[in-house]
Length: 484
Image (cartoon, rainbow, N blue to C red; front, side, top):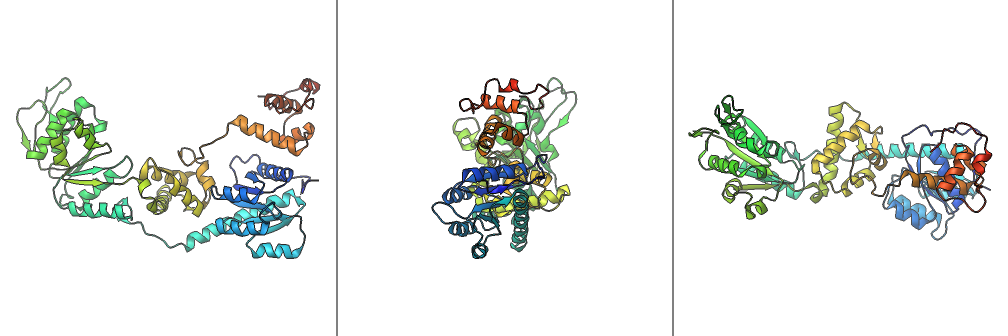
């Protein structure tokens, strides 16, 4: 006899494509566990079942759940001991205790040890769903309170470049020290670390802040056009040069030029850049005369420029001129202590910019962000913040919300089952619950028996003669909305 009693008219949430939250089911009876999982799945929840306290603790140490449904009588560790450990390991997750024990003292002891609610078997389907829903709402409330009670940490940094760790503080100190002078600066760092933000801040703090700031990337200009873009050209200097053109160094005269991806410059362009740094002179393409410019140069690259110098692909004399002051911005993965501050600040900024309600990350969601490697650095985190602001419907953003947003490499679990694997597992679970009663199983799955028989054969789930080869033909023919 099952310990969950189906209601005559259980509300269906199957049409809700968005999962309502993750529920962990801890139950040592496989039939009861599978039935509870099935009911929760049909109600729109994502449910995961385990059969022991040890499995549960191992799983909750790696994954987060919105609600935990725990049987009190388990093999090995007692249910009460497990309850206490769950409260220690995931204090923000409501735990609903389920047991066949009707003793009031047991219920009181469970509540004393931190259970959110207490259900006795057999449980009616509707009561199970309503209790899980209320527990989830309770968890949302706890998350909001934790967010409100958490001290507000003002973003630390220099301008729009944020960070409060020791390495970033040294970066900010060096930027402030070099900014007032006209010394060339070379900024190193991976893509997305904020090299352009650093250059703009140095410009803002410099005595040239009233002059122009011209930004150009060597990677965005065709090699044959680099010198023309940088230094200009005379009319007729080459095919297509129909008129005189001023280069970007002339545009930046009296101000600052930021040369991003400096390692992409051609050897010829490198020689012309060296002329600027040595004597403050430029020569337009097709011209025989030089002219003076007063420009401060800030350059940046994400390449290993010292290796390029050793291999002869970048001029050593130009490198020594550029690298009088080198500012290296560390990647985000090397400063995990700053991820929480950055994530919260960028999410606040994204919500404000997009006109969306304020969102906050739950503690477990923040743990998830801290554990990510962030190959795209701060730019990737900023991109995530915008997606969360746009697509998350919760005030408290949880790991399940992060996992449901597309385009998050490294955050979505690596092992994603195929549709066939999901369908096969679900059919097997329903067959086990119904004792391989195919009529009942087909009813629960919402498909004709002919479709169930075909899928049983397709997935190799048949047992002996329990699924006759001619079963499909035994059905009354008719349209099948669930055909493969």
